[in-house]
Length: 29
Image 1 (tube, rainbow, N blue to C red):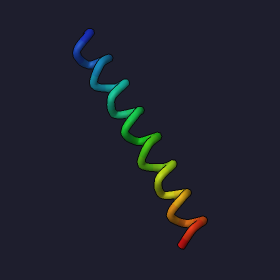
Image 2 (cartoon, rainbow, N blue to C red; image 1 turned 180 degrees about the vertical axis):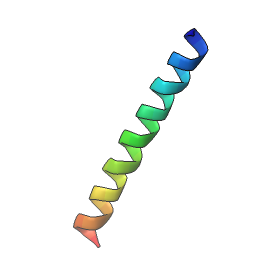
Image 3 (tube, one colour; image 1 turned 90 degrees about the vertical axis):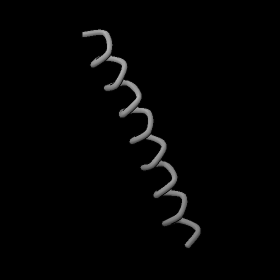
Image 4 (cartoon, helix red, strand yellow; image 1 turned 60 degrees about the vertical axis):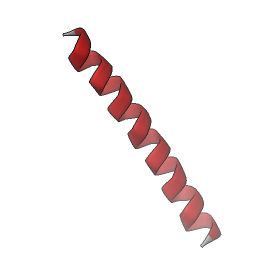
């Protein structure tokens, strides 16, 4: 249970970072 929760948090963080980078790339390029 704890491992799955940790994986979910890490996936959420990576997804947020990816979306933020994508938005910045779209704005600049």
